[in-house]
Image (spheres, rainbow, N blue to C red):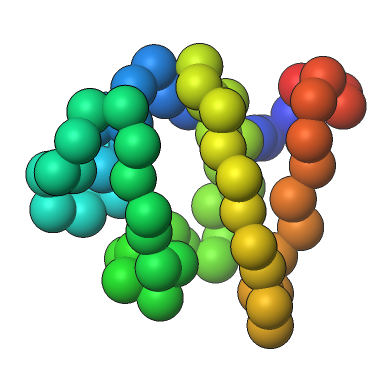
Length: 72
């Protein structure tokens, strides 16, 4: 994990901007279809840290996700 890039996302609006999504309709809540997110290069390992709560429902999602402080 030495080559992992750490991206700290402070707001939902900032998350939308980083993922090249349209501006959220409300600053405190957003529903996102992950198919609309532009994928990052596969050879780049990234770590996203959110300063807000996130609820994710995943189905047929080909990535590894970790929650909490698991070796950041």
